[in-house]
Length: 196
Ligand SMILES: Cc1cc2nc3c(=O)[nH]c(=O)nc-3n(C[C@H](O)[C@H](O)[C@H](O)COP(=O)(O)O)c2cc1C
Image (cartoon, rainbow, N blue to C red):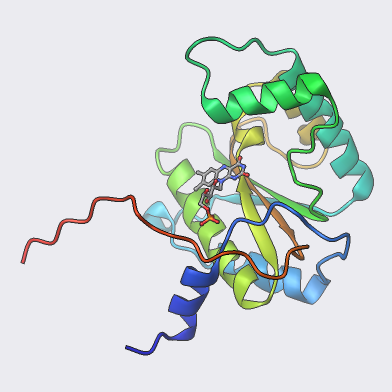
C-alpha cells in the first residue's frame, strides 16, 4: 500500500544527535510549534507550556547549569542508565545535553495535572513529525525533566517564564542534522496483539 505523507514522516523520523550551527528560520519554527499546539490535550486543557530557547547565551548558561547539577549527583545501584550517563559525562566535563542544537524547546505543564506528561508527549511527537516533514532534525531530551525538582535549574528558568506551579515534562532539540542519511530505524520491540 502506498504510504501517505503523514505515515512517511512517522517512519522517517529519527532522533538526531549531531546538529549544524544553522538556526531554524522563524517561519519554520513557528509552524513546528503550531503543530505542537494543535496536539490533543486531556479535557482540551491546552495547558502545555512551550518555552522556546534560541538565545545562544541562555542555551550556554543552561548547559553549564545542567552539567554542574548532574556532576554533583551520586550514582546509586538503581540509577537509571541514561541519568547515570548524564552524571558521568558531566563529571568528565564538556557535557552538552542538547547535542548543540541551535533551538531547544522546554515542555512544561501544571503540577498535579494528571495528563501533564501525556499532553506534553503528544505535543512533542507532533513537533517531531512536523520537523521531519520540513527537513528539520529533532530529538526528545529528558535531562530537564529529570532535574525538574532541582532548585538551581528552576530558579534559572523562572526568569524566562517557567511558572512556579509548572512541572518540566520534557524537551526537544531542533536543528539541521549534520549526517544527511541515518540508517532506517528497526522496530523489533513492542508486543502487538490483535484480537479480531
Ligand atoms: C520519553 C523519551 C525520552 C527520551 N529521552 C532522550 C534523551 O534524554 N536523550 C536522547 O538522546 N534521546 C532521548 N530519547 C530518544 C530515544 O532514545 C529514541 O527515540 C530511541 O532510541 C529510538 O530512536 P529513534 O527516535 O531514532 O527512532 C527519548 C525518547 C523518549 C520517547
